Amino acid sequence: MKITLIAGARPNFIKIAPIIRAIERAQRDGYSIDYRLVHTGQHYDDKLSKIFFEQLQIPEAHINLGAGSGTQAEQTARIMIEFEKDLLANPTDLVIVVGDVTSTMACTIVAKKLNTKVAHVEGGIRSFDISMPEEINRLVTDSLADYFFTTSQVANENLKKAGVNDEQIFFVGNTMIDTLLTHLPRTQKPVLWEELGLQSKNYFVLTLHRPSNVDDPEKFARWMQVLDTTGLPIVFPVHPRTLKNFSRLAQKPKNIRACDPLSYLEFIYLIKESKAVITDSGGVQEETTVLGVPCLTLRNNTERPETVAEGTNEMIGDDFVALSSALAKVKSGDWKAGKIPQLWDGRTAERIVHELLKLGAQ
Ligand code: UDP
Image (tube, rainbow, N blue to C red; front, side):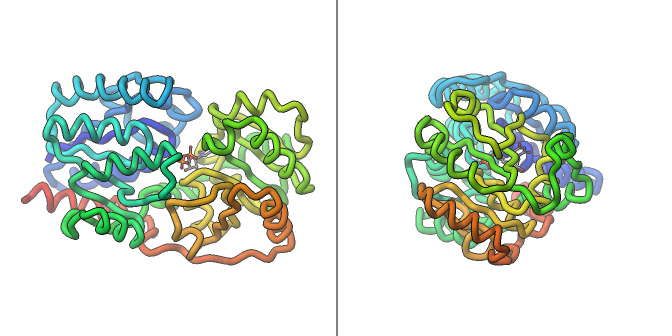
């Protein structure tokens, strides 16, 4: 079976690493399965791409489509134009897309228009918030894909409600957690730990990059103001799309220690040792649940409701007062312990490849 695996952005790299490892293991066991890795070039900054390939031991991509930055439409168009050429030159049995980034949607459209089957890893999750670019990517991808590898029962139900048949859905768990559990013993104390005089469980971590939080300078400044009053240091690895409004803040926060995006092994160390994480990231909501670290999500909705229902995540919405009281609650040690969702056990990629081999044999 020939597979083309698509990765374009930071969270994608974290999700494909265990799938590649599982495919290579199946090859060593004598199964006929081969892959071609396509990097769309959506994230090209070394700090969002190269370092993840190195640390997660992902083999070099067979091709980089060089999509680069631009508006949503420019990126989508460039990825589609380049991937169409690549897929025509390298026909495959199945295209695998992961997550919910522009590359996920763009490559799905191209593959289906070339009559190629598509499998979506992390299919079926929904925020039901169409103002999020990722929700549009999820809806388009899932309306076209043939197979869905899902992370939760909620995702399964969302797909069934949309008319997907049971035989197309494979509830396998979460490949992002495979990566977390594989690399947990190798995490690295970030260089800035000593510089900032950090102490275990005595600081917060902040990540923000969703348009709804960072694009409006006033709202972003207000979040910064509220967060600056916590009395504990807040480490803030600033995503490139957040940098402009952070550097324009009229009042520089005192407790918020901004730094470049961290490598995976450093970032996981940092959140594992933190008192709590404040975020709008999808993946970070999942990682904190598995690590048992309190997570305060600055959004009105989440496509990962199991992290709230079962894990350590709470939705703060757009509510500055709610953020202050949640921070006070965390500081007093009064936060739910949470448990790990079903099948988030580090063996998801193995289950995916098992299903792929069965599909290949059909
Ligand atoms: N991450 C990282 N370094 C950082 C910030 C995040 O390695 O400085 C990792 C984090 O562990 C998670 C992933 O990046 O696995 C989340 O990526 P992002 O928030 O960009 O995407 P989302 O999950 O929101 O789609």
